[in-house]
Image 1 (cartoon, chains in turn purple, orange):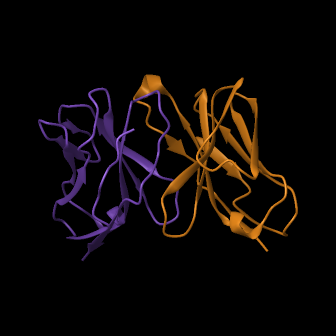
Image 2: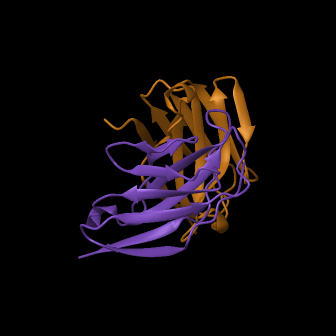
Length: 110
Length: 113
């Protein structure tokens, strides 16, 4: 599976959009981009995933660049409860294990 | 009830003791996983099982063993616990037919003294 690079930490004001970047320059054509988050010491929570098209669900939007070498997770209106560690993971969907990196620690402040 | 239930939630045990962590799921998924997390770090895969007859080692399987008793149950054992196995342990399930989003349990905090 391709390696990902994320900033170790980010801040965001409550009510503003949080844009979390992820670089995955060695991604293969059949690899998906997955995003999970972990709030405090709870079990990680699935957020969204995509292959090449932008995706949106009730939690977030995922923007993948045309060359697929990077992506951005967007939380449109961040709340204090979005404070968490966010993991960007690249893998062949459905066939490979989920391997976690260090993630980005997002702090949402009032 | 939670989709993925781990027991116990917290456990303190002594060095050299055998301990079992249990995981059960109601999602009906074939795939189950055990991860451990050390403070400030991401999760690392210990063992995984793609069906009842399939068991595979992950990144850090030394000192651990697993048993897949049924589709819904996947147990992790520490045969002889040591202090550096003190960590937060998570069980998870996934279904490739549903986008393969993983569902994690709430975790077991294990302390080996």
